[in-house]
Amino acid sequence: MTGTDKLIIFDTTLRDGEQSPGVTLNTEEKIEIAKQLSRLGVDVLEAGFPIASVGDFEAVQRIAREVGPLMDGREKIGQPMTICGLARSTPGDIKRCAEAIAPAPRKRIHVFLATSDVHLKYKLKIDREECVKRAVAAVTLARSFVDDVEFSPEDAGRSDPDFLCTVLGKVIEAGATTLNIPDTVGYNTPEEYGKLIQYLVENTPGGKDVVFSTHCHNDLGLATANTLAGIANGARQVEVTINGIGERAGNTAMEEVVMAIHTHPNYFPVHHTINTQLIYRTSQIVSSLSGMIVQPNKAIVGRNAFLHESGIHQDGVLKNRQTYEIITPETVGVTDINLVLGKHSGRNAFRERCKELGFVDIQEADFQRAFNEFKALCDKKKNVNDEDILAILTNQISANVNTSFYTLTSIQVVGGAETTSMASVKIFDVKAEKELSDAAVGINGPIDAIFEAIQRIINRRFRLTKFDISAVGEGSDALGKAEIQIMVDPATTVVTNSETVPDERVKKSAFSSCIADVDIMTAAAKAFIASINKQLVYESELAAGTARNFGDERKVNV
Ligand code: KIV
Ligand code: ZN
Image (cartoon, rainbow, N blue to C red; front, side, top):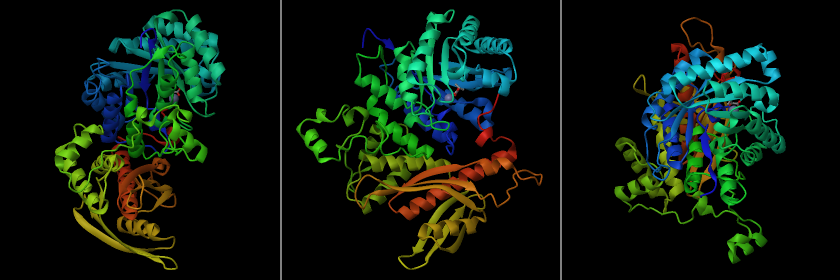
């Protein structure tokens, strides 16, 4: 790819993506995703917002230490991924961020400050002069810790372009090396956003010596179009998330931008170093761990993205794939030549397949558990394919980290048409080290009965805010995947600190989990318990004063 500029892929799945309602990734899950993003070829990884909580700080620091130096799959790129942390324009945020990213060989501090009149007047209650002062002070401080500093004028999409030129010119003087232009509220149209980027590139003092970056939200469904317009007009970094997850309607989806450039190599004056064949797998890992399902018709990574349903299309594709396919599924790692394993496959074949699927450094205990699950699946299913193995492996990551309070021992369900369902459930109380059991009837069927029994056992009530069951792959012997989100029942009071005042934040939090199993009822029960474990971990963090904020308070306001 000579003759074009390198486009820097800045992934914010673990920061802006994690701000999606209901998405809560714990540290182990974040590390697993960070490793996959490194293999995928991401240039800069925004690992989190270190000031948000002790947990966020520790996750960023561990990613900086454990993923920052990795070169696995990056041989062509020739350097490890840059680890970035977000900070508001305050000394406390910036110092905490610098401390969190310190262990990474390549590191960046990303500071932001709103510049639109509506944010200055109502949110920050400062004038433009004070805004410039704070932005310059923030970048100056950040530069005292690292050489690589990014500045974002929040709500740039609705800011006065000339004021933006003033602020940006000043932060360049103070040492900013990347200028990110967020359409924070997803307000812009592609033409408008493209023109804004062009205007800033041309009119910002010093603008020719820095990298301009896009950051688009998808409130009008225009995030990808706006990002591409930004590239066409001079941006050389894009801020994106896998599957487009993010606050409200989400962020720009990385897979869409990368494949648009791949499909139009002569139109966009840039090239990227993403390994497109890892896109589908990465999408699945993020979806499984975040509990955010990918809509079936989602561009590039949706289940239907490469299916041709109509007879005319099928006929055309059979004659020549190019008639109706602009991207081959193999290009993004969707293959139908899955290596099929069966009950005669041994540990080595299974280990090799895990490696090929991207799970290179799986711990021995996790590997053994995954292998046992694989063998159990082989007894029930003749052929086990990549999708099944991926589900087993992601199960392991979730299972490992979401078992701190309760684990499922067994369930027994009686039900059917015209009968009231009954479930008897046994769970293991990890803290008390004892088995607990109870039974319940389910007015709304067997799953209702299982959830009822679990709640009786642990003596807590939850509201199910999302519940999806889908098949992994095809056939009636396919694994069943349950995706569940819970919130505490608002009618119940939870006290999380030594005082008798219930912590209101508990009621705002929502936790999701996604677990696959050969039996859909077991999958549902495990996902329900995993979500409860996340909720209980959060409550204990609140009690210890180490928890971060959720809901409206989650993105800490300036
Ligand atoms: O959308 C936004 O403005 C942001 C900034 C913090 C970059 O996410
Ligand atoms: Zn954003």
